[in-house]
Amino acid sequence: MPGVAAATITDFNNWTLLEDPPHANFSSSVDSSSQVTLAASGALPSGTDIAYQSFDGFDAAGSTGGWAFDPNSDFSVSIGFDLSFTGGLGGFTIGFGIGEDRDGTDSAGVILASMNGSPAAYAGVGRENDNDVPAVGIGATVQSTGRFIVTYDQALGDVTVGVSTDGDDVIDGAPGLLSGMKAMWDGEMLGVSFFARGDNGVFSFSGGGADAVFTDLRVLSGSAIELPVTVPEPSAIVLAVLGVFGVALAGRRRRRRAGHGADRLERAG
Image (cartoon, rainbow, N blue to C red):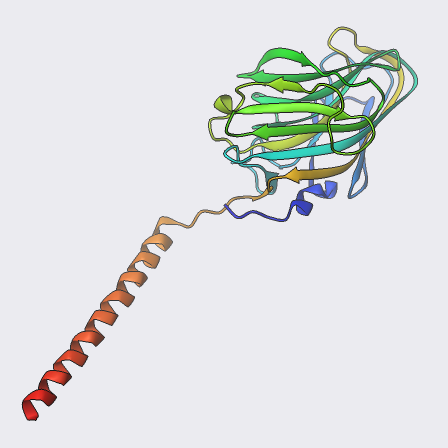
């Protein structure tokens, strides 16, 4: 698979908007190549999500554009966040993670949950076969700005999630560990996404405004792979192999002719 420069995936103009389901009180804007705002203006039902993902199809295999990561290689990604409210009431959540499809069927990431316009808790969360895995705590000072960090270790199959509270790419406090995630991906390439949700797992967002600004996606390690991944047609592979054999056979014929010429000269002498 051809690796591409990490900078390519960081252009949000090329990411794909997801709305699950679409709602008039949720909106999005790509402010620049490195900044996106997800905004709520009014009440939202629980389970209402708005997000951006790094590929344009249901999963990486079905995408005609975008970027994903190989689950057989280590990688680490981070993104800045800034969550603010105007009279926000009820629950609201933002997050950042990796997964194999747009439904989050098998996924892992980090969230910031809030209540009545105030940040409440960070957590590491995941889903396996569309079922929630137990959430894990993150021991960083809870605040409305910082950087989400997600790191994947392919040898162990684990995903480490955390938050930088001072804007660098080093996890502050105790990270969360989601163990054994590689097995559920079964070789499927992994996309990246960030999102806002109209509840905090208990209470829905019941009124006011919320702005979630995501900035400066960084690939800290590993390489994103540009989609679609092209595989040569079998006929092309066969032709290439035949070409190699053709070169080898031609070489043998030349050596034989040279040998016959030497024999003739020897007999003539």
